[in-house]
Figure 1 (tube, rainbow, N blue to C red):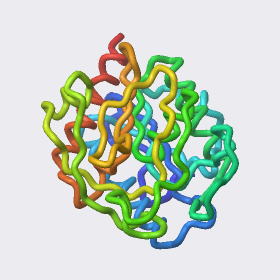
Figure 2: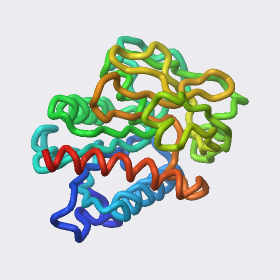
Figure 3: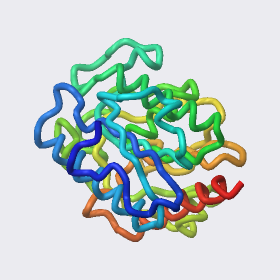
Figure 4: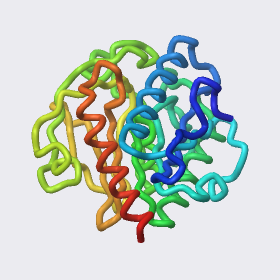
Amino acid sequence: MPNSSFPANSSLSNSVKVLIAGSLSAPNVSDYLTGVLRQLADSAMTSVRSGGADFRFVEASAPDRDAGAALEGMDALLVLGGADADPTCYGQQPETDTMYGIDPEADRFELALMREASARGMPVLGICRGMQLMNILHGGDLVQEIGPGTMHNSSVDNSIMTTHPVTLAPASRLGAIYDGRTLSVRSGHHQAVDRVGEGLVVTARSADGIVEALEAEGPQWMVGVQWHPEDPEAPREDLDLLIADFVAAARVRQSA
């Protein structure tokens, strides 16, 4: 169920409606990281509301409905960041002891949400873990540990963000959203996309070659970013530009 800190719905009853899924109560996650995840979720929700959309939040670690029911009446899906995905959901066994918050039930639920939303032609946005799940859904897999001392994390549980640039592919949705400029982003992750899933294309990379963004081929609005545009220290304009394009795509679907 949604945490009481986050309203189940905003006041815009006739607006575009976004389902926001996140795992804010993952097992074996520190209280500090849980607080960070709630702060990031609050920031994303605020941007969705500011963009003229309504939202409903569903806790992936304890879903109270199936994916199809959760998406009823919704126009778009946003999957937030959080804990690591269970390697068995992409055909591997654990290869490192640095993984945290593994919750197969949350993985299954959020993958089902993405699958169902895609089948319904709904815009889908994935942030960090959300992008990794997007890749898994399409048959891709992950690097389970990118190693210490990278530009992508500065704490064991990735709760402290780092800042680094990412380069966007000009001929991409993100390239159009950000006018092809290099972004300075906030990151906190120790895993990354490895084999890219079928039907997805890489549209951003960091200087060390890590995949920073994925988009679906074809007309569907499906975008995943590895960084955290919703981090309070990230440029707010960059988050709002991304959410505005996402909400605009949902509005097009709603009117159709």
